[in-house]
Image (cartoon, rainbow, N blue to C red):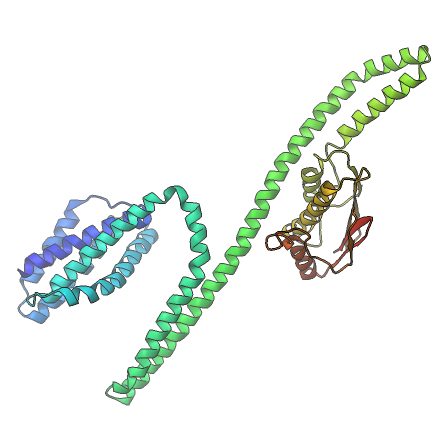
Length: 426
């Protein structure tokens, strides 16, 4: 009976690691039967040689550790990955087995081989748990990104819950130290408990740090993704401008012939109309792209201004790529300001709508002024949104102000009822 129980436990442990690695990490075990059989024979023979109950209890534990070593050799991946996979499954199964054990011990009535049968049932429940996790993973594979977003939102709550649970457990053990036999043992227990509590606090702080770092990384990736999208549109606009310029140059000879013919006939009115049409066509081509010398400004200007119609646009000044702030911070500043100006101008119904961008770069500073027509009256400190959804809007100007202050710059925003001016000095 002892040998049978050990053999069953050994087989179940092998099965648990195989199912767990596939369910959690999508990694399969290599099917090499020789090491599996040798490990099984070893633990069964060892259990059969036990001369006492205590020796058998110790040998029964080998049904845990031999499969662990066997699966460490059989699982796919390099040495580091294999260790992480197996150790993770071992830790998870150890914790869940203790939870299952509370219910199994209450329901199990078999007295003979009580612990061995209890451990076998716990392992079976662990296998079922890993199978369930595998099924859930397959079901939510299509919505994996959505699931990741949910996990990111609750990860802090989960970490705090685990930290509080561990702290309460350690404090409970500290309360029970009075029942320890000697003062030396009490002192040693207190030291271990203090180290554990510090470890819990350190873990929570580390998770918080990782969360903040991940938020910054996500913001950086989002900014880069937006810039990439804008760059693609910018280059498309440049190609369109080049094509239309080529066509304009190609047709210029014919235009000059037509103008010459009209001048020979002294048709002054027709000549003015013809020249006006040529000028409008030239301005349309000219407005296809803006070039200031700075890639970020060029991309943002062409992204937000290229499709505007019946709006006077003026971009004056040059700027190099050598800025006093990081590209990500500068993108946050300029993109929000130009976007706000475009949104404000689009809402107006007046004919005289305009956007002016003035750029001045010195040796140690950069000044950007964006002026747009508007009937708003603002003071320089106002950064509130006028949109109805105030919860999801108004964040842009707050971000602008925060980034400028972080970089030691100056931000002014004011409106006199005719136009709104946003001025940035870095």
